Length: 450
Image (cartoon, rainbow, N blue to C red; front, side, top):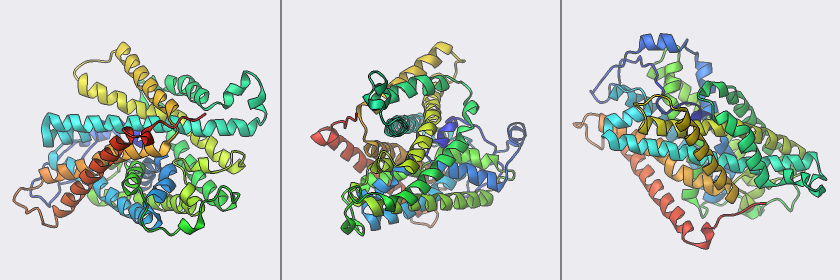
């Protein structure tokens, strides 16, 4: 996700040029050349690949070693590859759905296919996905910045009053209120656009740091070597949720398609293939290398597996924590825009409403980040429910609704969509069941960190 995917509003308008999708026999052209000329200068393939790769390589990548440990090494690697392939297909499917429906945003596609119920469903899950991301980013700030402070000032925790700067809860509150909150009050999301480059750089630093430092950690930090080649682990569906959270960038697909200098389905397919391949290499590098070292000790935030005084890892922690300062407001922007578009689409801008929703959403996410430090569970729930709906269920359901009813369900046109839809519903159902099961048992108690 992810983080950069949240930089766009749910109702972003994009230009469509393609002559239509031939598989269904139902074609509706969208001709927005004039709008495109006004809004976009048009980018090349390289620009679009960079944007999409950055959309995928978000904060969720930090939980991929945990996903491999939950699914087992063999199945975990298979899920990384398989879900990357499914993501590649469904990203392109969103654009195809837009062309079939004659609509130009994810919400309007769902509204065209399923009416007000579809609009409500996609709005809810977009809000839930972005809000879950905010909670995850708050947890990451608490996981990273205190380690860096302790590393830079080893005796700070012994100094009265100043020792509070090494406290996880205080750092979350301080960073959220003093940095993320003022940035969240912006109306123009483009003021935060420079965070995109910082995000991608942070991901590359994390992957390189884990790859270099993992084999060098002390034996006491390493996991059981006998568990490296496990075939199936105890948390397959949890792993699917975490991986889904990492790969979802579907509400960016229409924007990236429209930003191509010559937008065609073939060119967009090449962009998608290259971007997902780059992302898969980075994800597998981090997921496999970290799991191979920590196995059964792998945590939801892989950086927590390393020593607090590891210099290179602390650099990665600092870059990642710094990135969270700006990506959290980006997620809040999506939450706020979903509410505005769904409930107040016919009203003008209201500053009191803007401040109220910004404050309420941010404080709610901060509270959840304060009471738990389990990033893995946060990614499981957000990915298993919201990401599954946005990435697998909705694109496939819309495609089946928009294609010609005379085409049999078992045809090559429809069968993959049916398989994707059934897979998504199964993962969502099991994820909800497991989440509710944890809530009603001691296992679901909040893990409180200091």
